[in-house]
Length: 301
Image (cartoon, rainbow, N blue to C red):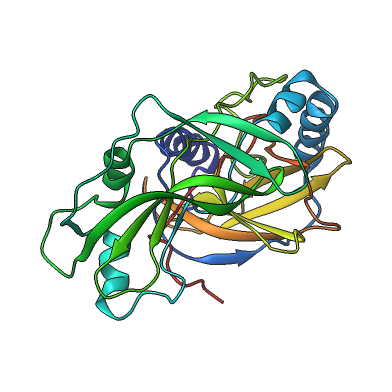
């Protein structure tokens, strides 16, 4: 018996919205954007989102802020060795050094092409807690020193120098760097999200932005799908001011569908570099937030 796709789609959509709100994405896989031309409803929606954002006050506010589009934690330049990679991925750390205080201070984000922004400085103990997420058994990384420095982070406005906590790791010459400022808050979007009754084979919310290629010619996102379909597909509508991504779920298979929600990496190739254009989600009508997804498994062919 074929699964009731409308009922399943609505269930998956509720789950996807919940996971997106919590900043979580589970599962594995990798897919190249492709498939047939988007359905007219998704194409129309993408155009509506682009028209609402391009040239808007929200877009101007977005461009003035600090919005990373890559990981704000960088391991030592020489790379991690052996079991240390697993300790880093699971968040197993030991602290054997005092953490300096920086409460109440601020730091400056500076862009290579000009412009700067002052942001509150994150305390060293808070930054360390974002690294030390697990107290379980297994290999551990030992922090022997912490000091304030800086790092380069790719942002929606291009590369920026940002304040960073530099954590010296036992056995490594270079430090692990963690940005010491938080991203700017998102502006109020000029268009609202779609309702939850939209079938996911038309449009579905994205789980987050994982990577913008160094040449800007592709973006990698997390797209949600269920256990009884053929996986996600993501297509892009490009304008001078934005890149609107429309995610959908391809056809369900025969058999009993479960409520299991999966996240899959999807790389979307673009006609031209992203540049300072805003990467938007057609479903939510909002910028696609960066998500660090250390649990992502190697892709499927």
